[in-house]
Length: 164
Length: 164
Image (cartoon, rainbow over all chains, first blue to last red; front, top):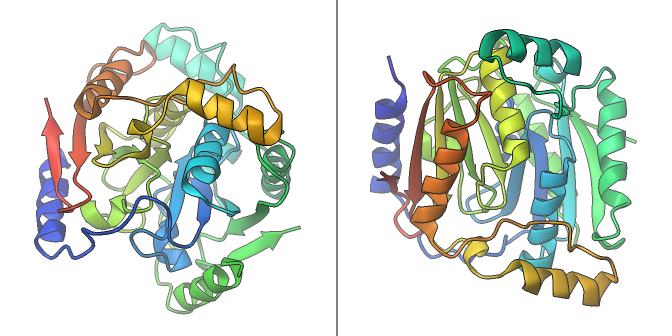
Protein backbone atom coordinates (compact mmCIF):
# COMPACT_ATOMS: atom_id res chain seq x y z
CA UNK A 1 0.00 0.00 0.00
CA UNK A 2 1.47 3.38 -0.95
CA UNK A 3 1.98 5.73 1.97
CA UNK A 4 1.58 8.95 0.00
CA UNK A 5 -2.21 9.33 0.50
CA UNK A 6 -1.79 9.12 4.27
CA UNK A 7 1.13 11.59 4.21
CA UNK A 8 -1.05 14.05 2.29
CA UNK A 9 -3.98 13.53 4.66
CA UNK A 10 -1.62 14.32 7.56
CA UNK A 11 -0.50 17.44 5.70
CA UNK A 12 -4.13 18.55 5.36
CA UNK A 13 -4.53 18.26 9.12
CA UNK A 14 -1.28 20.21 9.65
CA UNK A 15 -2.36 22.97 7.26
CA UNK A 16 -5.82 23.19 8.81
CA UNK A 17 -4.33 24.37 12.11
CA UNK A 18 -1.25 26.13 10.69
CA UNK A 19 -0.35 29.39 12.45
CA UNK A 20 3.28 29.90 11.32
CA UNK A 21 2.57 31.55 7.96
CA UNK A 22 4.41 34.79 8.69
CA UNK A 23 7.92 33.57 9.45
CA UNK A 24 10.94 35.14 7.73
CA UNK A 25 13.44 33.11 5.70
CA UNK A 26 16.55 33.43 7.97
CA UNK A 27 16.63 30.97 10.89
CA UNK A 28 15.62 32.80 14.08
CA UNK A 29 18.18 30.99 16.25
CA UNK A 30 21.06 31.25 13.74
CA UNK A 31 21.75 27.51 13.95
CA UNK A 32 22.34 24.90 11.23
CA UNK A 33 22.14 21.20 12.13
CA UNK A 34 23.80 18.49 10.01
CA UNK A 35 22.36 15.09 10.94
CA UNK A 36 21.86 11.59 9.58
CA UNK A 37 18.71 10.83 7.55
CA UNK A 38 17.91 7.89 9.88
CA UNK A 39 14.17 7.53 10.50
CA UNK A 40 14.66 7.31 14.28
CA UNK A 41 16.15 10.81 14.43
CA UNK A 42 13.76 13.74 14.57
CA UNK A 43 16.27 16.55 15.10
CA UNK A 44 13.71 19.33 15.51
CA UNK A 45 11.93 17.32 18.18
CA UNK A 46 15.01 16.18 20.11
CA UNK A 47 16.59 19.68 20.00
CA UNK A 48 13.40 21.60 20.84
CA UNK A 49 13.28 23.48 17.54
CA UNK A 50 10.14 25.23 16.34
CA UNK A 51 9.29 26.15 12.74
CA UNK A 52 11.63 28.97 11.69
CA UNK A 53 14.38 28.25 14.22
CA UNK A 54 17.20 26.42 12.40
CA UNK A 55 18.35 24.94 9.13
CA UNK A 56 18.38 21.15 9.15
CA UNK A 57 20.63 19.39 6.63
CA UNK A 58 20.44 15.61 6.48
CA UNK A 59 22.03 12.83 4.47
CA UNK A 60 23.10 9.21 4.87
CA UNK A 61 25.41 9.34 7.90
CA UNK A 62 25.15 13.07 8.56
CA UNK A 63 28.41 13.36 6.64
CA UNK A 64 30.20 16.63 5.80
CA UNK A 65 29.97 15.80 2.10
CA UNK A 66 30.59 18.41 -0.58
CA UNK A 67 26.83 18.88 -0.78
CA UNK A 68 26.52 19.39 2.98
CA UNK A 69 29.28 22.03 2.71
CA UNK A 70 27.32 23.67 -0.15
CA UNK A 71 24.28 23.83 2.13
CA UNK A 72 26.25 25.10 5.15
CA UNK A 73 27.87 27.85 3.06
CA UNK A 74 24.47 29.02 1.80
CA UNK A 75 23.18 28.77 5.38
CA UNK A 76 25.73 31.15 6.94
CA UNK A 77 26.53 33.39 3.98
CA UNK A 78 23.02 34.13 2.76
CA UNK A 79 20.92 33.38 5.83
CA UNK A 80 23.10 34.30 8.79
CA UNK A 81 23.64 31.10 10.78
CA UNK A 82 26.52 31.20 13.29
CA UNK A 83 26.55 27.76 14.94
CA UNK A 84 26.80 24.40 13.20
CA UNK A 85 25.92 21.17 15.04
CA UNK A 86 26.93 17.79 13.54
CA UNK A 87 24.93 14.75 14.73
CA UNK A 88 25.67 11.08 13.96
CA UNK A 89 24.05 8.25 15.94
CA UNK A 90 24.40 4.78 17.40
CA UNK A 91 23.25 1.78 15.33
CA UNK A 92 23.85 3.75 12.11
CA UNK A 93 23.46 1.92 8.81
CA UNK A 94 26.72 3.49 7.65
CA UNK A 95 28.55 1.17 10.08
CA UNK A 96 27.19 -1.93 8.32
CA UNK A 97 28.64 -1.94 4.79
CA UNK A 98 31.66 -1.07 2.66
CA UNK A 99 31.83 0.78 -0.64
CA UNK A 100 32.78 -2.47 -2.37
CA UNK A 101 29.77 -4.29 -0.91
CA UNK A 102 27.14 -1.77 -1.97
CA UNK A 103 28.75 -1.32 -5.40
CA UNK A 104 28.60 -5.09 -5.91
CA UNK A 105 24.93 -5.20 -4.84
CA UNK A 106 24.08 -2.39 -7.25
CA UNK A 107 25.98 -4.04 -10.08
CA UNK A 108 24.16 -7.32 -9.52
CA UNK A 109 20.70 -5.80 -9.14
CA UNK A 110 20.67 -2.90 -11.61
CA UNK A 111 23.61 -3.63 -13.90
CA UNK A 112 24.79 -0.06 -13.34
CA UNK A 113 28.29 0.93 -12.32
CA UNK A 114 28.57 2.77 -9.00
CA UNK A 115 32.34 2.59 -8.77
CA UNK A 116 32.64 6.39 -9.03
CA UNK A 117 30.44 6.93 -5.95
CA UNK A 118 31.91 7.12 -2.47
CA UNK A 119 28.98 6.12 -0.25
CA UNK A 120 30.86 7.52 2.80
CA UNK A 121 30.42 4.54 5.14
CA UNK A 122 32.45 4.48 8.36
CA UNK A 123 33.68 1.94 10.87
CA UNK A 124 34.26 4.16 13.93
CA UNK A 125 31.30 6.29 14.98
CA UNK A 126 33.08 8.88 17.14
CA UNK A 127 35.93 9.18 14.64
CA UNK A 128 33.38 9.88 11.90
CA UNK A 129 31.97 12.78 13.93
CA UNK A 130 35.46 14.20 14.56
CA UNK A 131 36.33 13.88 10.89
CA UNK A 132 33.21 15.71 9.75
CA UNK A 133 33.60 18.49 12.34
CA UNK A 134 37.19 18.91 11.17
CA UNK A 135 36.19 18.96 7.49
CA UNK A 136 33.80 21.83 8.17
CA UNK A 137 36.20 23.74 10.44
CA UNK A 138 39.03 23.48 7.92
CA UNK A 139 37.02 24.61 4.89
CA UNK A 140 38.49 27.87 3.56
CA UNK A 141 34.94 28.89 2.64
CA UNK A 142 33.67 28.76 6.25
CA UNK A 143 34.92 31.45 8.66
CA UNK A 144 36.61 30.49 11.92
CA UNK A 145 34.13 32.38 14.07
CA UNK A 146 31.37 29.91 13.25
CA UNK A 147 31.31 27.32 16.01
CA UNK A 148 31.16 23.67 14.95
CA UNK A 149 30.38 20.99 17.54
CA UNK A 150 29.83 17.26 17.10
CA UNK A 151 27.53 14.80 18.86
CA UNK A 152 26.38 11.20 18.91
CA UNK A 153 22.64 10.64 19.34
CA UNK A 154 21.86 7.41 21.18
CA UNK A 155 18.85 5.76 19.51
CA UNK A 156 18.16 3.73 22.68
CA UNK A 157 17.98 6.73 25.05
CA UNK A 158 17.27 9.74 22.83
CA UNK A 159 20.24 11.52 24.39
CA UNK A 160 23.06 13.48 22.73
CA UNK A 161 26.69 13.05 23.84
CA UNK A 162 29.31 15.55 22.72
CA UNK A 163 32.32 14.16 20.85
CA UNK A 164 35.43 16.13 21.76
CA UNK B 1 24.45 34.19 22.97
CA UNK B 2 25.22 30.65 21.78
CA UNK B 3 22.14 28.49 21.32
CA UNK B 4 23.87 25.17 22.02
CA UNK B 5 23.18 25.10 25.79
CA UNK B 6 19.46 25.55 25.20
CA UNK B 7 19.46 22.88 22.46
CA UNK B 8 21.11 20.44 24.89
CA UNK B 9 18.67 21.34 27.67
CA UNK B 10 15.81 20.60 25.25
CA UNK B 11 17.48 17.27 24.42
CA UNK B 12 17.60 16.41 28.14
CA UNK B 13 13.85 16.99 28.35
CA UNK B 14 13.32 14.85 25.22
CA UNK B 15 15.46 12.02 26.59
CA UNK B 16 13.76 12.15 29.99
CA UNK B 17 10.44 11.12 28.45
CA UNK B 18 11.85 9.03 25.57
CA UNK B 19 9.90 5.86 24.82
CA UNK B 20 11.13 5.01 21.29
CA UNK B 21 14.31 3.17 22.25
CA UNK B 22 13.42 -0.14 20.61
CA UNK B 23 12.89 0.87 17.00
CA UNK B 24 14.59 -1.03 14.17
CA UNK B 25 16.87 0.67 11.63
CA UNK B 26 14.70 0.28 8.47
CA UNK B 27 11.97 2.93 8.08
CA UNK B 28 8.62 1.40 9.08
CA UNK B 29 6.68 3.17 6.32
CA UNK B 30 9.27 2.53 3.56
CA UNK B 31 9.38 6.22 2.60
CA UNK B 32 12.29 8.59 1.96
CA UNK B 33 11.65 12.34 1.85
CA UNK B 34 14.02 14.76 0.10
CA UNK B 35 13.29 18.32 1.27
CA UNK B 36 14.88 21.74 1.59
CA UNK B 37 16.85 22.59 4.76
CA UNK B 38 14.70 25.73 5.25
CA UNK B 39 13.96 26.40 8.92
CA UNK B 40 10.23 26.85 8.27
CA UNK B 41 9.89 23.28 7.00
CA UNK B 42 9.45 20.53 9.59
CA UNK B 43 8.80 17.59 7.25
CA UNK B 44 8.08 15.06 9.98
CA UNK B 45 5.51 17.37 11.50
CA UNK B 46 3.79 18.40 8.26
CA UNK B 47 3.71 14.79 6.96
CA UNK B 48 2.60 13.18 10.22
CA UNK B 49 5.76 11.09 10.61
CA UNK B 50 6.71 9.48 13.91
CA UNK B 51 10.18 8.37 14.97
CA UNK B 52 11.12 5.34 12.90
CA UNK B 53 8.76 6.05 9.99
CA UNK B 54 10.82 7.52 7.15
CA UNK B 55 14.24 8.68 6.01
CA UNK B 56 14.48 12.46 5.73
CA UNK B 57 17.20 13.87 3.47
CA UNK B 58 17.61 17.64 3.41
CA UNK B 59 19.89 20.14 1.70
CA UNK B 60 19.79 23.69 0.38
CA UNK B 61 16.86 23.61 -2.04
CA UNK B 62 15.92 19.96 -1.53
CA UNK B 63 17.94 19.30 -4.70
CA UNK B 64 18.62 15.86 -6.21
CA UNK B 65 22.35 16.44 -5.88
CA UNK B 66 24.85 13.62 -6.20
CA UNK B 67 24.87 13.40 -2.41
CA UNK B 68 21.07 13.19 -2.24
CA UNK B 69 21.25 10.34 -4.77
CA UNK B 70 23.91 8.65 -2.60
CA UNK B 71 21.51 8.86 0.34
CA UNK B 72 18.48 7.67 -1.66
CA UNK B 73 20.43 4.67 -3.00
CA UNK B 74 21.46 3.67 0.53
CA UNK B 75 17.88 4.25 1.65
CA UNK B 76 16.25 1.82 -0.79
CA UNK B 77 19.07 -0.67 -1.32
CA UNK B 78 20.09 -1.24 2.30
CA UNK B 79 17.00 -0.14 4.20
CA UNK B 80 14.07 -0.99 1.95
CA UNK B 81 12.33 2.29 1.11
CA UNK B 82 9.95 2.14 -1.88
CA UNK B 83 8.54 5.68 -2.19
CA UNK B 84 10.53 8.89 -2.61
CA UNK B 85 8.90 12.29 -2.02
CA UNK B 86 10.67 15.48 -3.21
CA UNK B 87 9.64 18.74 -1.49
CA UNK B 88 10.69 22.27 -2.44
CA UNK B 89 8.87 25.34 -1.11
CA UNK B 90 7.68 28.88 -1.77
CA UNK B 91 9.92 31.81 -0.74
CA UNK B 92 13.01 29.57 -1.06
CA UNK B 93 16.42 31.19 -0.66
CA UNK B 94 17.58 29.31 -3.75
CA UNK B 95 15.40 31.65 -5.84
CA UNK B 96 17.32 34.72 -4.63
CA UNK B 97 20.89 34.38 -5.92
CA UNK B 98 23.06 33.14 -8.78
CA UNK B 99 26.24 31.07 -8.67
CA UNK B 100 28.23 34.12 -9.77
CA UNK B 101 26.79 36.25 -6.96
CA UNK B 102 27.57 33.84 -4.11
CA UNK B 103 31.01 33.04 -5.55
CA UNK B 104 31.78 36.77 -5.64
CA UNK B 105 30.60 37.23 -2.03
CA UNK B 106 32.76 34.31 -0.88
CA UNK B 107 35.78 35.62 -2.79
CA UNK B 108 35.39 39.06 -1.21
CA UNK B 109 34.77 37.82 2.32
CA UNK B 110 37.02 34.77 2.67
CA UNK B 111 39.46 35.13 -0.24
CA UNK B 112 38.68 31.54 -1.17
CA UNK B 113 37.73 30.37 -4.63
CA UNK B 114 34.31 28.73 -4.92
CA UNK B 115 34.23 28.65 -8.71
CA UNK B 116 34.21 24.83 -8.73
CA UNK B 117 31.03 24.67 -6.63
CA UNK B 118 27.59 24.64 -8.23
CA UNK B 119 25.35 25.97 -5.47
CA UNK B 120 22.28 24.67 -7.38
CA UNK B 121 20.15 27.82 -7.25
CA UNK B 122 17.03 27.95 -9.42
CA UNK B 123 14.74 30.58 -10.92
CA UNK B 124 11.56 28.53 -11.47
CA UNK B 125 10.24 26.70 -8.43
CA UNK B 126 7.97 24.15 -10.11
CA UNK B 127 10.54 23.47 -12.83
CA UNK B 128 13.14 22.76 -10.11
CA UNK B 129 10.84 20.13 -8.60
CA UNK B 130 10.24 18.51 -12.00
CA UNK B 131 13.95 18.52 -12.74
CA UNK B 132 14.84 16.82 -9.44
CA UNK B 133 12.08 14.21 -9.76
CA UNK B 134 13.36 13.45 -13.26
CA UNK B 135 16.98 13.23 -12.09
CA UNK B 136 15.99 10.59 -9.54
CA UNK B 137 13.70 8.68 -11.90
CA UNK B 138 16.33 8.56 -14.62
CA UNK B 139 19.19 7.37 -12.41
CA UNK B 140 20.32 3.92 -13.59
CA UNK B 141 21.04 3.11 -9.94
CA UNK B 142 17.41 3.58 -8.85
CA UNK B 143 14.86 0.97 -10.01
CA UNK B 144 11.76 2.04 -11.91
CA UNK B 145 9.37 0.47 -9.39
CA UNK B 146 10.26 3.09 -6.78
CA UNK B 147 7.68 5.87 -7.01
CA UNK B 148 9.00 9.42 -7.07
CA UNK B 149 6.58 12.32 -6.61
CA UNK B 150 7.28 16.04 -6.29
CA UNK B 151 5.62 18.78 -4.25
CA UNK B 152 5.78 22.45 -3.36
CA UNK B 153 5.24 23.32 0.31
CA UNK B 154 3.61 26.73 0.78
CA UNK B 155 5.29 28.45 3.75
CA UNK B 156 2.26 30.74 4.14
CA UNK B 157 -0.33 27.96 4.42
CA UNK B 158 1.64 24.84 5.45
CA UNK B 159 0.05 22.98 2.54
CA UNK B 160 1.68 20.69 -0.05
CA UNK B 161 0.75 20.92 -3.75
CA UNK B 162 1.78 18.19 -6.14
CA UNK B 163 3.85 19.20 -9.15
CA UNK B 164 2.92 17.10 -12.14
